[in-house]
Length: 108
Length: 128
Length: 137
Image 1: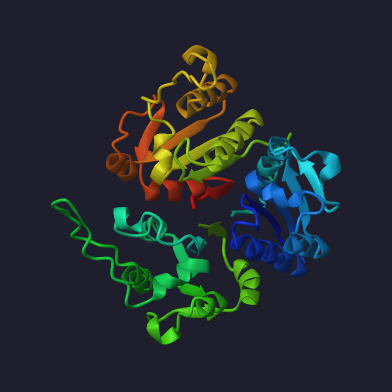
Image 2 (image 1 turned 45 degrees about the vertical axis):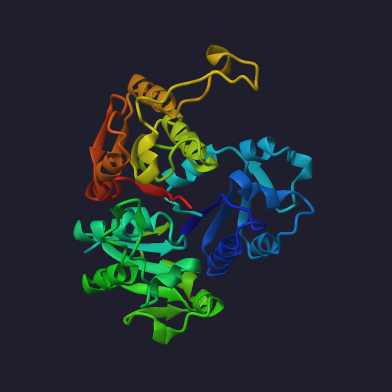
């Protein structure tokens, strides 16, 4: 079992590759790896409750931990009460801590 | 034992005309020369790098002619000749109407479901 | 706080074009703050991040003179992070891809940065505890 940190900086509304990346996160989780999906920049847009993000929901259902950069959320006016249930806010330091702990980090 | 890197390349034709190559494939070949075990997985639009008939020659601006256009497929062939593997996403090629017989030889075609297990074989995974 | 590690970042984006360059600086800032040694390999457009001749300007639409506008300059961010690292006894090593510098004509980089190539990036990754590549699009 390995630890993966997948960082998604794009949104699925403008970028088709994002659904592929969510799918990769879900696949890795289904192979029993520990997977965190860190959303940043426009990548946090699908984290708003009610956003059309089936791939994100599927990743969460597969056991992927989904966190969103707190600054990117605030920058876009998405407060904690507006977050989709599967998403938690986290500071950017989370990425550094995961890197320092040896997570296999992949940026998209 | 060589440290092995899987480079997943998705962005395609970005600055390839000015740089006369794909800067990511160029970097891959450079670190290959520095001793890295380099493999490439082409996804999204980057699967088109495998097309044999790419021709970017003939650019000219005023009297300034480009004499060395990018040769993206050839660069991948050289990466393979130097011991690197090139994988490509079968579904992405199919979506783009890119038939296998129009592509260079030596590529290993993967389904999307094959990608996650592939990552385990590498020490480093970089997504471009 | 976790134990000190060495982290390497490869950046590709220049300043003022998209959000990735700012996020990259936020990550480097976080890594320095948390006491890690940091290597940065600036590739392609990212070699302009440390260009010494970045200059702030006024903004008439904002109604602010240059001093009031206080326009961010990535070269100042990098210099400040290098100073912070030095002050706390950690390292922030910034290497610009030399060929990328040459073709863009941004040879005047801030003090403390250096030139290198892909082989240097490879050596950095081998000597690091972890590496994050932040590509451009």
